[in-house]
Image (cartoon, rainbow, N blue to C red; front, side, top):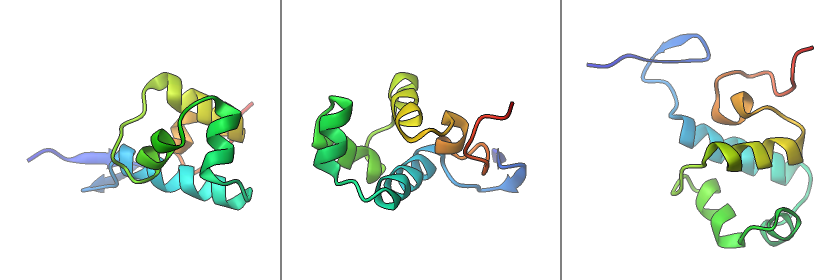
Length: 89
């Protein structure tokens, strides 16, 4: 059996793709942005965003960075490696 460690906690943890989906949707909804509007602003398809938000597509590093930069958070936050969303100085 493999032990997964996320956020410093052992156990089954939350898969990074699942956390990415959850946090992406939360960030978008907190800002009152629709899927189509976000897709337009980022230059990607709305169906891709839906797939990311539903955990059906795993983001590449480039896509993670695209969303992180847009929302002003870190990729580590998006994938659940930290609960602190902003870069530490």
